[in-house]
Length: 252
Image (cartoon, rainbow, N blue to C red):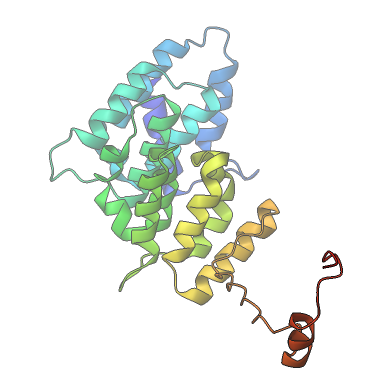
């Protein structure tokens, strides 16, 4: 079965499809999954083995591995451990392609592996070559860390050489609101808007307001000017009042 999977992954990477538009990998997985003696633990070990193969640095092979895990529902501990070793414990010269880093990291998350900011920032190839996909993983690594995510996104969208635009957050809205607790989201959005040029910050908040029904704005309300006190009575009236005896004054 191991060699069959390896062959199917190679065909998948080469782009071979059947007349029906399916890949050999998809057809093979359908047959394997329907077998009565399918052993998910054994298949987990097989997936762990192919992750360690040298051609796993090829992005299409990595995508095929991710597809295989999805179709078989195999997200076991052997695969998790193999992914951690391949991503973070291999010698420096053994570098995965950007897309392979993304696919295997995303698969590691689904396997329940540790994926924190430390792991995220080791994916330097992905960050430099495909910052949008790196952003996807940042939303996972900084889940419920408002300040960490704010600093990370700010560094990507502001500065002299921004790697992404704030609009990259639009297709990632659901991930964004999952990463930031609801009671902290407005504060997060306002702080992020402050990092953008004024016009861009306004557009960003308009989008947030449309999605959430809020009324966030960076415009500072102008303090109300105090109306100058004007004298209700003119000097003639004051002289009249001051010169008139009190009505309640007792008779002499």
